[in-house]
Length: 257
Image (cartoon, rainbow, N blue to C red; front, side, top):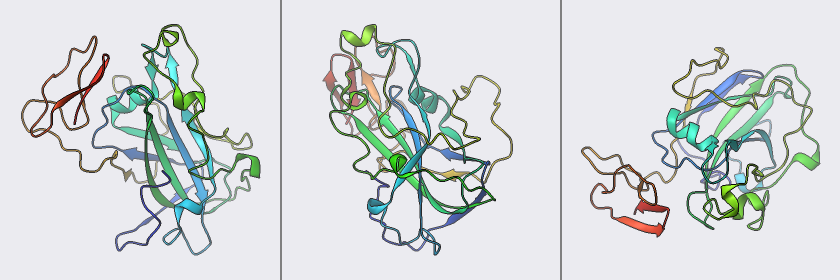
């Protein structure tokens, strides 16, 4: 749940140097679920760096969140829908953040399967430069797991239920963003069909791949592993690339498994 690993140092670990206030871009090879929120966390590391940090012991704070953008929970526009369209996400590092070594954690929460929330985290190592002094107080720091409960409304929500057809609000799991930060771009990002208005001063992109890492893309026809292949109102592919089968999860959603 924290970073898809136990913090064991690997031979290819790298640290990106980025100035506070700059934008970092996470890039995905694919993402197939339009329903759910997108959040970004940071966690401070020792002066020696993040390479050997056990991410299960880290104290995380949120710097970005976006959930239900418009419409209802049932048929509305979600942050994950933008990720599916763009396959990337730009996040500003708070401009007044205290310099130091940090882990960054991108989190997608897929809500397409009723009562079965799916968290997909990916992390990278940063060295943040600058002259800022801002750092969250303890009430904004959380452990992962521990930042939310299975009973939280943003986790247990059924987007296909009768109430979802008129519900226009969604509570994003996790802590609040520290109000002392400046320069965070907690606004609706552009879609792939609109001009990109994200600040052009960006750090070199860090490529992240949406879990699970074994997902494959079909060479000809058929939906990929874990992609949607059916459900009420579905108009896309109904066959899966071999060897996966289109599996009924509920009347609104079938998935290649």
